[in-house]
Image (cartoon, rainbow, N blue to C red; front, side, top):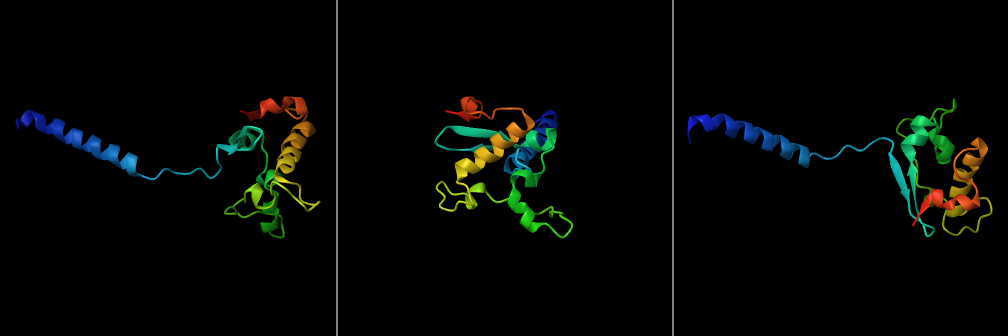
Length: 133
């Protein structure tokens, strides 16, 4: 190999090594998911988690009320507290009158909040603003 190709070969090898490192390195997961996909029979709902947390300033425990169980005496929730899926407590069919079923829990939380702040979809004729077929 002529010596003039040696620098090109070295640079190519470095670029291949960097590309392999970037491809094989595990992806970092965000502490707060950007979007959450809620699949259901009425059409999936894409919930923009980042917008509600960052732009609207909604606290985690507003929706993830089970986090309040992990709070200390001063009401502080540990940084490493993991919210549990809604379906862990709210089943599709609920026999307990104190625990709404999953659909009712979502609707009460989401639509109730939108109605309270008088913004976004919260009436029955606006279903297609959240549910996509």
